Amino acid sequence: MLSGFSDDQIALFGCMAALLVCGGLMSLSYYLRPRDAREHGTEESSTIAFPRRAAQEQQAAGDRRAA
Image (cartoon, rainbow, N blue to C red; front, side):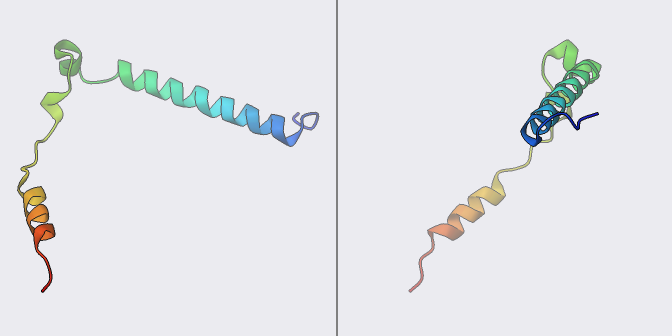
């Protein structure tokens, strides 16, 4: 079936097929997202906010200098 094409052409066909599959999955996930996100326009209801304490401790640790 693909014996008439060069290696470069087969690679291009593979890349185009991968882009089409990714685009299809992306559009499918858009239409299947939760109803709350569609009604409110955001997905904040499903996000979890983590405290920034760890980032502050890491910055404080980075500010220390060796003697």
